[in-house]
Length: 364
Image (cartoon, rainbow, N blue to C red; front, top):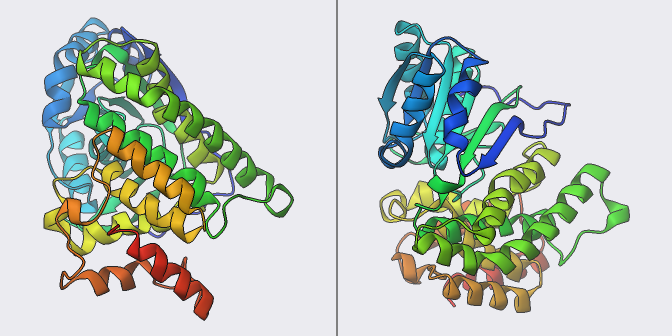
């Protein structure tokens, strides 16, 4: 069953400990041993393939017995309950997630369900999920459900750049554009935030996000090139930190609120109303298409065109037709209404006209 949404007055920076280096997996066992005596490893198929053996060796070297559960399911409350039950039955008292964003969210949910600490070992930077103290939750059929916000930070994030260099460039591109959505979503409705009109936490999140965007755009092509040959270099090192840690800090400064608007609402709509067609696309790929809509709504069409050009440069889909949804699709009006649910779009004629124009940008 869904949890009552938790809104904390405390600001959490995201992760208690963050390790990023070429041999970080060799340190993972020691980090896990600080937190528990038996580990329950929740891993995606690809995550276990690229990092499972080294993670297992590290746990063994640290004297930590472990049980492995391969998961390729939506991050649902039901899955979290099932896995927490399996972990409890095995006598585990610390959860280790290894894989992409979905597995990172699932591992957090399992740990929260069981009341255990969690160590995250991301194998892609397509999202900052490894760092953020929340999970985006879905129904068992893969459609969006809600967001589960946690009272505590992630205990440890272990980022091995050798592993990160094995990810497809597509994952890097998706992560970069997902992170870049923070600036226009924080400034929702205008081209920029007013320093005097915002609380200091949101303003700081916005400024961090601006710095993040400049560096991500500068380094993303080179990082993708390094991943294409499987060799971690300076660009990949920077983009990994920016996508996971700094983007996670931006999220933490807003306590998970006020950082998502039309781009992420579009993503939720695609996962809910076009679940089958959206299944083959990454979180960041869908958010990026919505990002163009967000920028047009903000009145920054020049930036929307520039971002779309970057998406093309990185080989990403840039319009709804490119992910299989035509302008005359029967569900389009439903998607338009889903995004305009009264949370982000005003009811007056000017706001509606601006939203109409922005929605058209999905097909441009």
